[in-house]
Amino acid sequence: MGMKTDWWGAQTHNEKVIVALDVDSRTQALALAQALQGSGCWLKIGLELYARSGLELVETFKSMGFPIFLDLKLHDIPTTVERTLKVLSASGVDMVDIHCTGGYSMMARAAEVCHQAGIKIIGVTVLTSMGPEDLREIGVQASPEQQVVNLARLAKQAGLDGVVASAQEAAVLRKQLGPEFILVTPGIRPPGSAKNDQVRVLTPREALEAGSSYLVVGRPITQAADPRQALAALWG
Ligand code: C5P
Image (cartoon, rainbow, N blue to C red; front, side):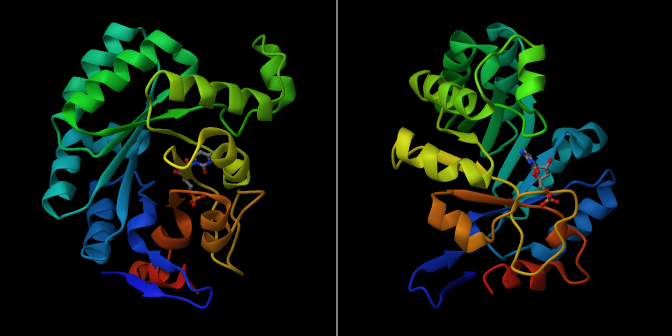
């Protein structure tokens, strides 16, 4: 479902699209899920919606057939992260994330508990809101690009399945970390659509060609009059 062959000869899949439900109301989130049900796309629940509705909404979306990426970006001592991931994984989520700057031990323990539960775990390297000066302020001398690659390598060694990265970083990460490493990329816009506050954006096709595994798309779908049609329009 949601699959077609397009002009560049590759198959495009809604299964590679993660729709970011960046809303703070359960009603709005449910309306979006109903509009997208059966399309094959994933849903991403971030801190805002999680703060509103918690794991109950994860279970509801799972019962509607969606794969779920629970984007809480955990960052704490290994034991706390491990115990929290046990609770989260029991809800049926399919993918979760943690901050790579929590360190090797934290990532390794997190990877182990997620793999036992059969779910994917990915890492956040450097928040894209941070530039070179922000990194220096927290004692990191490496450039953002170097730091992203360093942390992604450490994440892979620790057993994480992949990282969240800007679509612009996808090509270098794909090259450095191999074909199996999951790259989840936001900053995606269909050709000709509003950028909102995203500065550097790639189209879905460009991101997949650069090596993205999953595309995170928010406002182009969640603010569309017809979200399902907006999902289809990603592929031109
Ligand atoms: O609406 P839009 O498509 O810009 O939403 C993108 C989603 O990806 C949001 O949930 C945003 O928090 C997230 N994100 C991002 N840039 C990053 C990391 C995450 O836009 N570098």
